[in-house]
Amino acid sequence: MDKRWRDVGVLAAALFAVNVVARLIIHFGFDGDDTAADRVSLGMFVVIGLILAAVAFAWGRRRPLGAWAADVAAAVLVAMLLTVLVGPLLVGNNPFSGGAGTFFAQIWLYLAATIAGTLIGYLLLTALGRDHRSQTLKRYAEVKTAKPRRVVRR
Image (cartoon, rainbow, N blue to C red; front, side, top):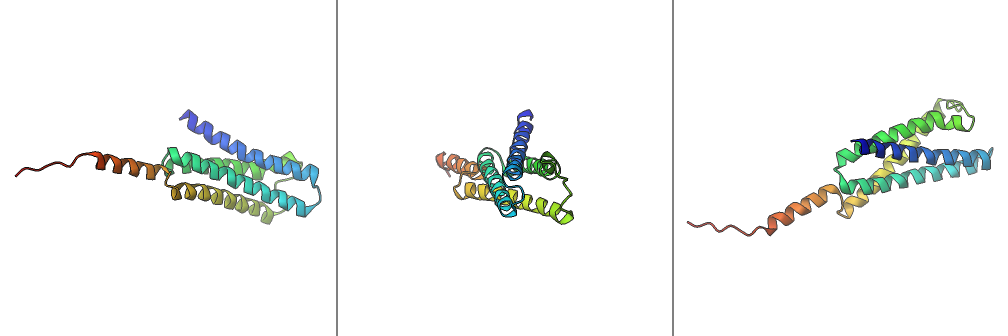
C-alpha cells in the first residue's frame, strides 16, 4: 500500500514539475509574447499527455483497470490543483488574475490533456492485447486447452 501512494505522489509531482518548467520558460523567455506562451503551454499539455499515456501503458500491463485508474485520477487531481492554485504563485502571479474564465479554462484544458493521454495509452495497450484483462484471459484459455479431454465411460 505504501508503494502505491508513493507512485501516485511521484506521478503528481512529475506532472506538476512539467507545469513549473513551462511557467518558468514562459516567464523568463517569452514574457509578454502571447503567441510563444501559447505554444509553450500547448507543448506542456502534450508532454503531460505523453507522460500519462506511458503511465497507463505501464500500469495497465500489471494491474486491473479499476486499480490503476483510481491512482491516475488521484495523481491528476492533486497535480491539477497544484498547477492551477500554486503554479501561478511561483512566477509571481495571482491564480485568479485572469478572471474566472481563464481559471476554469486552465482546469478544462488540463483535464482534457490528461484524459486524452490516459485514453491513448490504454487504448494502445488494449489494441496490442497486452493489458491485464487480455493477459488473464489468454492464460485462462491456455490452461483450459492444455488439459486433456476426459473420457467418459458408459
